[in-house]
Length: 385
Image: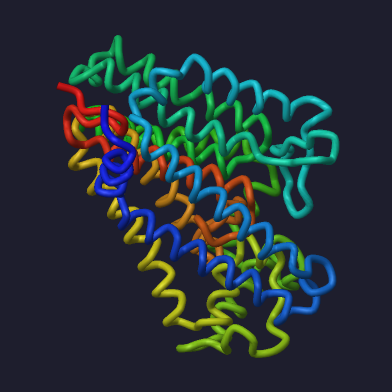
């Protein structure tokens, strides 16, 4: 057995300090933004006060601790315990269809749980991590035979289950996150170009079917407004948020108005889904680019971790976490720029939201575990021989 000092030194030496530092920088930036928001906007002063940044700070610190703990545990254990975390995650999502499920203010889907007014959270965030672990294990079990039809069909079914569950909540944005995770992971497993070509051919027809049979008028308008803002010429309906978001984003010009520059322009959900518009006001173009660079660095580091993982299971896990952060970042910024429909996805580590921050750090912790255990035979408390 190792000594206590040896355990601590071994843990620190194996820790993915670069990834943790990048995530911490992003979180710190988010806390600073949420601290300044009530100072610069009367609405947030009146309705939120200091609660935004305090909640974010607590969630970030708790998330970092969770990531540090999970990084020291071999990721194989998380995957092997699928029979525990997967049912729990699914049951929590199913509870949103009961009286415990609530619709948060500013949202149009019943995707949150409220336990007697004491705590509320979004169970889909837990399901994301469980899906990455179970799907990574499924891909690892299939091995190099992912393209065999007898394997490919069950894999598609595996990806469809959580996606359809979340769609049942009415949370189209999060459902698309699961779709993106599925495609990134199965692509990393060596999906044949034949399937990709078939999917590309079928996509327009599937899109037409979804458009005419499944999308409501409001959902269609969210997409149509990207191509024709004149469908809402008054700016008081579906296009209002994106119109104001672009005005706010550009108002900071090159270097922004500063963290405490006065009464800044108000945009609905500026603390959450549209926080990038606030970054534009506060830090301008330079701040926006710096924010994108930090988030891009996190995703690149996750890809490096996947590249040097000691086995396919670790590789797939890192790719899954990469998919979450990449999709959230692209869609969130795209919503503010008016090139993506408004589907309610927060900016990773930066947007307000205790559940999303803690669970995202949990996912990062599992990816850090892949990095820590990339050396064959290494375990935190002993060396395997």
